Length: 119
Image (cartoon, rainbow, N blue to C red):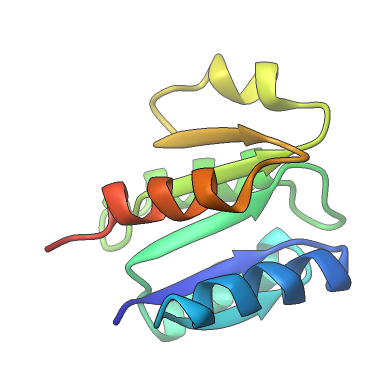
């Protein structure tokens, strides 16, 4: 299926999300902050990015801005999952295809992923 980058500094949450996505047949790669996610995206282009908002080094907002500013990767859809910053992200509808508030239902996340993946 699709390669999905998961960026979250909370390892257990990222690993759980990766397991959910892999159970759906997707391939995942994890990043613990936005800068690492950006490196992974530029090395091997994913079909989708799922990112947390609050991360060290580069936040999810900064990551989304960097992606949208780079013509080679600007069309990658981004799902933001956030505990407290969902309202901030919703003010940037040009950056995020979907915003899910933590805790989110796994079915809602899978539905968002399926809506955004090509094909």
